[in-house]
Image (cartoon, rainbow, N blue to C red):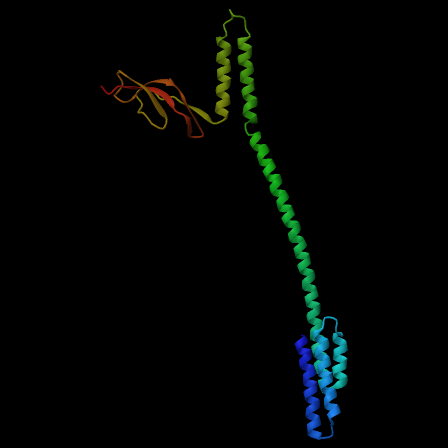
Length: 228
């Protein structure tokens, strides 16, 4: 924008010199005055604390009426651009504040989510533990019976309760039948014994296995018919 006003000042000077040359009536002092005015416009527009746009336009119009309309148009254009610049600065400041708040909110959200996740992990087995404590209480009561008391019914009842707890957790038993083929992923061969069962098939279950939601968490320990 400063270059525009400098150009306007220079145009004013050139115009004055041209009229002086054409009429022959302008003396050296007039030409010098024109040069001084052009230099003044250039200098003031280049300075940070120079005259206002309105002042410059008034000076140019007073010096050369032929440039008055152009000067006013440039002045209006500068004012419009300055207003747009100020509006953009305000918008940038507003967006920057919103972005800062959004970042802070997001960081707080991550902290809250992390804390909630940690709490959920700590309490993930809370319900299971509550049910198992009931089973343990039953076992303690069974052991508290007199030595001559038959505790088998109480133990059987507690075992049934324990099985219900496992079933509620999607745990099922792996108990293959005699004569079933050995599945290496579900069965662990403990012994090979002589049997009437086909060679290489399961004879007996030494200890049942467990699977949870279709995943084997402990294979069944089995005896297998010898190949001989």
